[in-house]
Length: 401
Ligand code: PMT
Image 1 (cartoon, rainbow, N blue to C red):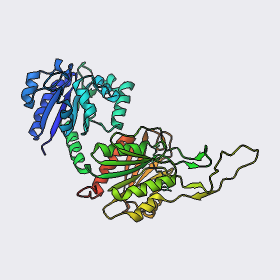
Image 2 (image 1 turned 180 degrees about the vertical axis):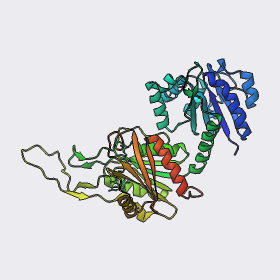
Image 3 (image 1 turned 180 degrees about the horizontal axis):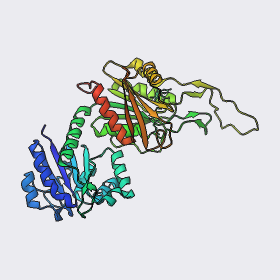
């Protein structure tokens, strides 16, 4: 599998390892184009790099050889790997700065982007860098975690560039993943629904949309076409995703049912209100000293409805928010809803599930088998979920497009 790899090198003592990496990637049959930052060139001999890649090394945005080509470079590559990625460069990527060739390419790239950080332990664990890494992961950038070992300072610690083998493996995963999800049409629902009581009040829940948005981002970064049907959230739409905003469960149902036939797989991560007001008040109800009784009626079960519309090659993933994970009850829920996979969230502890950045998920399949995926940031779990889907779903040979 020969691919075009754009290898970004930044200012780190580990920059010389980019040469070894180039040699290995070329042995694997890949074509490697190197782009180095100004600081990387303090550690990396240009001529050696050009001999190793067999291409001119680009660095200067205003070099006539690449000033016109720079968008092509981003467009033509199958993966953009920044190794080593310095603290400064990770921060730049997270902020979307583009003041040199490599950072501009990172913004222009539509292929999978991987970063292999290398720096002192205190820098890697600094809250600013942690936040930037989190931002990048949430956007679908694949971080190849550094290793613990001797550092340039002479101390032992976390921050050594990942091993060549780990980088190669991560690249392989991204390149293959991109192949499997490429062109697959994914439908994701996310966030809460708001059921109107009157023009200013509603019944809602604490869903932030983070889990569904993380799934949409992960699918898009693997090359899928993603439609995200979102209830009211404070989140920005993920890049490259077709977003449809809805408010109530009935609007969500209409939007999902309309889109479903054109999609290969659907993730129902939305926290749909089970009830709505039978008769919402047309005007704001004034306080009048009396008690107020609201009459509620059941909303349609959207997921169960989809399972009745489902074609044999479509795949349906449901979620369940549970305070106590009872395997038998969950299996009943999965079968009653007709899903092909159920992802049960543990919402018994603060800091996981609704609204938080982390979640704890157990996956169940119709044959009764289950897998505890553990507690992770939602962006990490989204990728773990996609890995599990890859194991059980027979991907359609071509998209329905
Ligand atoms: O949005 P976040 O803050 O990131 O939180 C994520 C989450 C906890 C909301 C999410 O991971 C999750 O679990 N979503 C589903 C929550 C839920 O509504 O669970 P449920 O057990 O009530 O519903 C089971 C399944 O049926 C869900 O897939 C739900 O989308 C679907 N459903 C529920 C009711 C209904 N009327 N129609 C439905 O389709």
